[in-house]
Structure formats: structure tokens, C-alpha cells
Image (cartoon, rainbow, N blue to C red):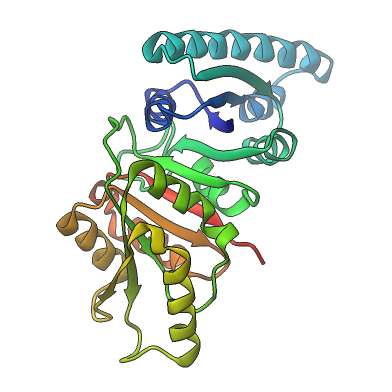
Length: 282
């Protein structure tokens, strides 16, 4: 049985991510943990009230959040009606990323699945602050980011973006292989050409990666270095009908540059597919 952690801020986007998760794992025995952090509300409210009243405010927020989580739980049970799935709730005053990392360690979480932005994010924003913080700070589980209010569709084509500058282990690739196997997906390995040819190290990493991913029948696609990263990736996604974009996150890699371009160019609407972020294992 897999344990799936799904944060919620009670927005339509958050519920859509939960619904997507349930549909995506329809045939798998899963335990879903619905998580809500009210840490931001505590910080906001307690900065304006008497210290002596803080405990009462926290208790009230906890009770209110727990009721809302129960409503979400009952709604998803009614919407899914799947006896392979069970649902639990956790409400906390810890920050969202701290709570997620704590639960991952205690509950053996396989995936964290969340919306790309919450209820307060602007339309033009590529990803909300909570999602960006999760990408940077979640280290022990893969993060599946679902675009706002997205309806589920089969994942037939997956694009994995890499610069071949580091080697990958089978453990790092396990989440990608799991999704590939469950959906019988085809893999596209995307590489942005920064030089005319691969270095010896890149070629070695290329062959190691393709050996690991062989079950997904990987195909290599080399994108032009004359195009900005974000434009090249989004064009390929749209032209090839990609259903899921995947990357491994580590410091100073392609992912950071991709996000910077997305924000600067205000191209949030161009990617409307789930995004799998797998943590690097050093």
C-alpha cells in the first residue's frame, strides 16, 4: 500500500489536486493523508492580539481547520467511491513544508501531490509560494504538482528533462518508473544543447540513464540551444502532446532557470500538465 500526502488550503485548486490523485491511483491500494497547515493564520492573527489569547486562537483555528478537513474527506469519499483507498486528516500549526517533511519521515510517504497554486495566487503566477517552497525543501519524497482545477487524463507520454551533467540512480528514478509502469507510458528524454556535442561524462550519464529507463522505451530529443529553456520545453510539450513533465531537483540545475524564465515571461498558461519533481539523492 502506498501512502500519499495531499496538502489543502480548502481551495478549488487543492481539491482538484486531491481528486486528480485519487483518479490517477484508481487501481492502487492507497492511504491518502489530507494535510492542512494553519501556521500563516496563526502568525497573522497572533500579531494583532494579546499574548494571553494566543492559546485560544490556536485552538479555535485547529477546530475550524479540522472541521473543514473532515468536509473535504467526506466529499472525496463520495466523489471517488473506491474501496482500495482510505483517507485520514492531519491539521497542524507547523509551517507547511516542515509538516510535510515530518509526515514523510513518520508515515513512509511515497508521493506528495498538490496544486501548483492556492486560492490567493494570481492568474499569471506560474506556481504559488507554497508550491515553490515545497520544491525547494521537500527532500525525501517526490512531489507531483497538478495545474489548477485540472481534469484527470491518462498519462501516455512523459517528458523527462536533463542536462546529462550528473548520473542518476535507480532509486532516484523509481517514482518516474512507477508512473510509467502504471500508465504504460512512453518516455521522452529532453536535453537542451548547450554545446555541439556531449562531453564524455554526459555520454556516460546518457547511457546509464537510458539503461535505467529502458522499461519506458525512452527516446532522446535534443532541443535547440538557440531557444530559451522555457520556450523550448513548452513548445515540445505542446507539439508532442506530453501528459507529464518530470525532473530531478538539485541546486543550480535546469529547474531554477526554467522557473525564472516562467516568471519573467509570464507564461504560466503555457504548461497545463502535471509536473513531477523528484528529489536528488546525493
